[in-house]
Amino acid sequence: MKLIVLVIVLSACTYTDTGSLVTSVALQTCDVIQTTKDTRTGWKTRMENNPILGEAPSTSKLITYNAVTMAVELVVWKILPPGYRTVLGVSWSGVSAYALISSNRKYICY
Image 1 (cartoon, rainbow, N blue to C red):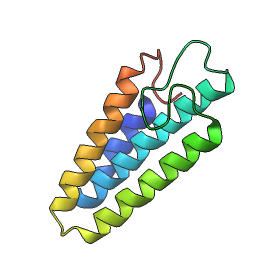
Image 2 (image 1 turned 120 degrees about the vertical axis):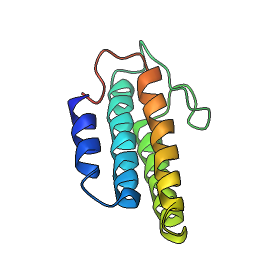
Image 3 (image 1 turned 45 degrees about the vertical axis):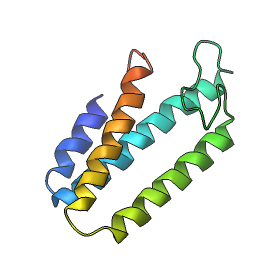
Image 4 (image 1 turned 135 degrees about the vertical axis):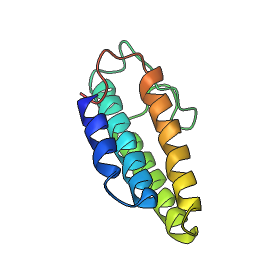
């Protein structure tokens, strides 16, 4: 949780468009870190909520999916005019934050 707060605070020191993208990528990275830990334990106590990945994706599938997702977000962010970029970053941050919070873990991005 401290890492997420630090990233959000530091991203406020940049332009809003860039800050929203940095926050979004940081939140997605935290989600990947948490979910990767679940793949290592064999999905004994949790299951993935993303229907595209399935209930128990492999580590390689998880990392590939998130790398492609982040790349698409960056390309769309670059194409959009300033101002709309903020909307994209904030929207994506909301989706990532929801994924982190809904995972019901004791610690976020540990």
